[in-house]
Image (cartoon, rainbow, N blue to C red):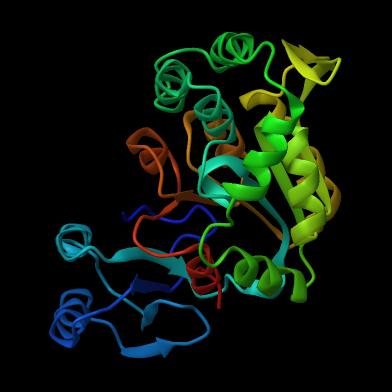
Length: 292
């Protein structure tokens, strides 16, 4: 998906980044011809094949060609460098990790279809997230905490390239934030595992070793995510820094809107349309290639 980057001053030179598990040489040559690119630079360091087409003069037809070939593509300003990134924020479920934790908890209790149906409608933006969360958590009443432990141990897996991406940004001096409309039971463990600087999520109420079906305190929703991201971005960004946000669901959109660089990762159509860039075919490490 190609959108003009908001962090590119008018008239500044743009490059086109093409990424996929495998790229056909003839396709690459055709894209270079379409864009009238100055040259093509192969990119290394990611698990996927990637190229940067320098100083592209136009991009008509690129989106359609890449969609047909299942390539990720992005117009990026040349002045966008990795060392300017001061904050990177990720959603948790289906972004940092490959599953929706609440659906997996429900699956262990035999009620996944009911919970997953509500999750899917909320992710598409069809129903209010707060209401959907209250309804889904209510269905988990009586679930033992041991079930959450089993979900974390057996089902929670990092998305491909997650560690590589985070290590790349952290080595350049960026701070990291994990935000989720999910639960601190998982975010706190992932924060320790991966080394996030900050984390925000909902607290599940527990009594006698089981979930009560209620949330403790204020619900972390789309606006909470955006507000926390904005606060930390203001703290860390400085004069010429960049704040990056990555998400997949409708409740990530306000946070993506706050970002200098927003990326939809294997996301719903509404989120892909609202983000600056989309990664549909590669892992999270492909994000690094969107920065010089």
